[in-house]
Amino acid sequence: MPNEKPLELCIPKVSSTISQKKIFDTFCKLNIGYIERITENPLYYHPEFKRVIIRVKWDNTNPLAKKIQDVLLENPTEHMNVVYDMPWYWQIYANNQKK
Image (cartoon, one colour):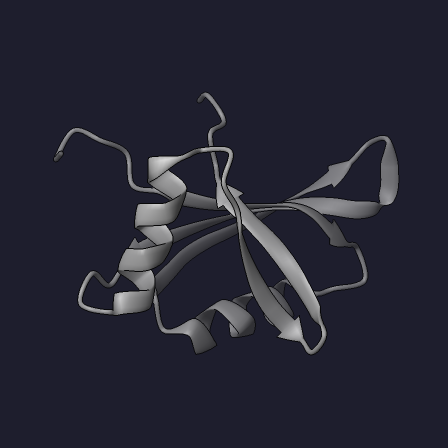
């Protein structure tokens, strides 16, 4: 496992009006680990939206962090929902971009 890349999260479609700070604060509240980096990429076919990649240094002592990793690594097409403003939520996936 040491050679494996850590799991990054992807939110494929986020409104451009939502700030990076809002995303950061939402994931900090989950207490799943240290947020190392958040990358935002505009969707060229929908300029009012962006794709967000979140690199996390996972806290494997947290049951929620372990659950997210287990679900997303077991089936890469699976997603989980993160509520950021009730009832609004983001669907998060494992980031599978080739580097």
